Image (cartoon, rainbow, N blue to C red; front, side, top):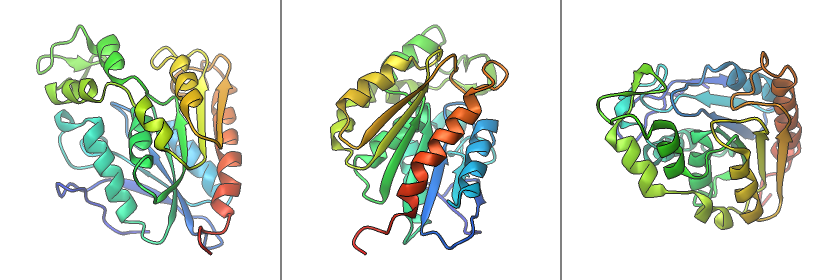
Amino acid sequence: MNAEIRNAKGERLDYTFHDAPGGNSSVVVIGHGVTANKDRPFVEALAMGMATVGVPALRFSFAGNGASEGSFEECCITKEVGDLGAVLDALPGKQVIYVGHSMGGAVGVIRAARDERIRGLVSLAGMVHTAEFANREFGDVTPGAGSMWDKPECPLSQAFVDDMNEIGSVTEYAPHITVPWLLVHGVSDDVVPIDESREIHALANEPKELFEIPECDHVFDAFECPDALPAMVSKATSWVMPLALAPASGT
């Protein structure tokens, strides 16, 4: 795949496509979390793992992140829901399984609740209570005058804070998701507490599954927990594979 992907504002979205043999009609699309990009090691490892088991994967950076065009100050969940829509538009005829990490997980919940092109959803340490997250992580930072987690390249904007507060929580979308849903979360996650995945899992429709990884942090860090990354990749690929290889709906 070499098509250019642009969002509703005309901003080019940077992506890497991992092809797989066999002409599979499904594609796994992977979205990252806040202050990250498509090249985080665990995102790349997951995409490569999908391709290895025969499922093409596309990992991309939301606008304003990584090498994608756009301003980081405009980044927020609502805009990223639109970015994901632009990626889906670039995959006509494909059955998409979306994998979202952290804030990218919240993006996926909102998009999957209203976009039938997503036939499967995977949340990796998915953010659920957005207003609580913004207050917990950045409540002592002044929007427009400080940065996220002391990263100068990631200034905290009023647009981000307002959007997180307006959404509040993505729990209301859970009952509207009718596709298979896998939630993967580290028990030792101190950025998005595992209780958030447990809570939204309880509200979700079947088929659903919550996979907890002991001693695992927010980013499946192999240095902190050597088993975390292989456990996440193994679970996600084994769960996605039969869904991706199943006949398309209506065929």
